[in-house]
Length: 178
Image (cartoon, rainbow, N blue to C red):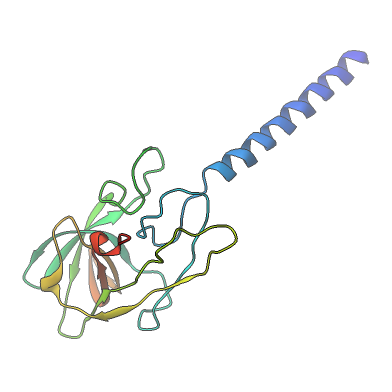
């Protein structure tokens, strides 16, 4: 009887320590969200980015790093989280990509936007962390930079490719703090 009680107490303590470790790890590993492009690093403070009204309200079909262009077709290295890489700045080319290369067809009806979101001059704090409003302007495919432009595409899948309806691109160097 005494051994059963001791075993139950030890199991309860192990479970309690496990839950505490999980919660502590979750708190320490919170990353800046959601676009991951804003260069604020992994500070544990989440900054909300409000999508521009011109963009669809659904998730994009693909987002990632622009790799190459062949006439009206672009290739995007799809984003894949790199949680195991330490010391890599969120949104940097080393942090983006790693997924499959996706073919995106641009038509004459595709709406192309350039992300012109401006970052606050000061890092957010727990007490001062207003959401950032994303802004976009008309853009062109000619402004895409190989391995530097980040792309999000909304459209419809057709086999292994995506027929783009809306494309938005940003250049991380442009999004860095002044």
